[in-house]
Figure (cartoon, one colour):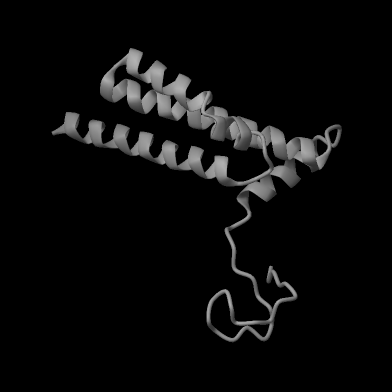
Length: 125
């Protein structure tokens, strides 16, 4: 539970780091990837990483569509979905083994559910 690496310099933070601690993002993505591999070992760890990223990209697309549809209508939601899906950046990073698409999905999901909460609060007044 204490990730370390072999660079003991103070370059990343400017503070002395004699134990070599490394502070990065919380490994939710890695836990999902490893958990899926343990439960369903038929696919490799790399394939599970790519599948989780693809699912996160699809979830981000869904949240983007729902946000824009709620605000501007179904046509605008569909157009934003198409532009988002076919952006070269999204095509490339939507299948890599990185936690970034999961972060985008979580951020858009947070915005969407916050938007629903605000609407619910307005209707109850």
